[in-house]
Length: 323
Ligand code: 5IU
Image 1 (cartoon, rainbow, N blue to C red):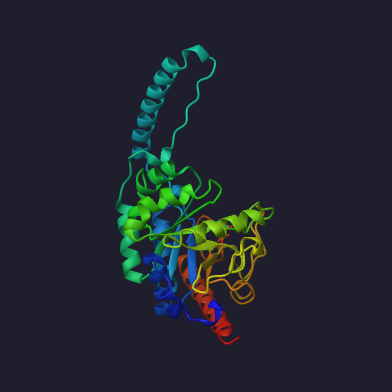
Image 2: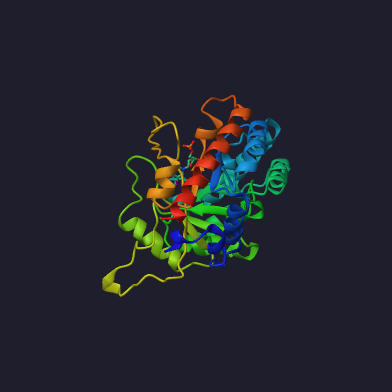
């Protein structure tokens, strides 16, 4: 089984460049820790990443929670108003007979207005500390829309994020849309097969379908956000499906904490030990367990905790190898 192999040995089993590079980074840095930086102020965001970078193989970000600067915001508002006005006019003309119904739908993410400095600094930190960047965008729309969201808009995610993720809910077309942008750039995709939250609907047949979708797209989808390994999942005897011995999906697992069991908004935590040893996951994703819960980020303590999670994750992996 995959669990008997080292991360380095598994790198050669992946054709996707982002997957290979992640596995090599894990091996080189002896770290299976991904730090999740859900910090909304640019200065804090960058200083946490600079502090924890040496201990992480991967940094997970979600750039939409970074506040837009005020001047940008005003410009953005004018732009949105202009688009809305245009949309109202065209809608009003075309659906005049149905005048009671005017609907507007925008994707604010695909509007061009962004200061690239944050991306520049993030990319510099990624080179300085030797980690990959994972934008936790959780795409969930039709293929055409996600391709636009991934390539363009404010954040131009595909241009800097080595890895991103998507909900399987729209079906295989979401992978086609994203891979049309990401594959030529050497990017990789994770599917959200399960969630860590209480009452999650991503279970049972939904999870099985997610794994089947990934199997059909192994050049681009190299793993899952999940709480356990997926080797046997979605293989039905009735369809004569057997496990391909070369299959090696990476499992990246959020909901990891040493101290807490959850928060008051449905998050549930497991220890690194449980996640890596019992559930056989490959990368632990840790956020508030490292950068804390308050608005004022304590960089020194984030650094100490990142080191602690890295050591715990790596020790447990070495223990797993010996099983
Ligand atoms: N995240 C989860 N659970 C999931 C998925 C994503 O916690 O099932 I999918 C994200 C949310 C947050 C990070 O960005 O992982 C976990 O942060 P904390 O360690 O602070 O709970």
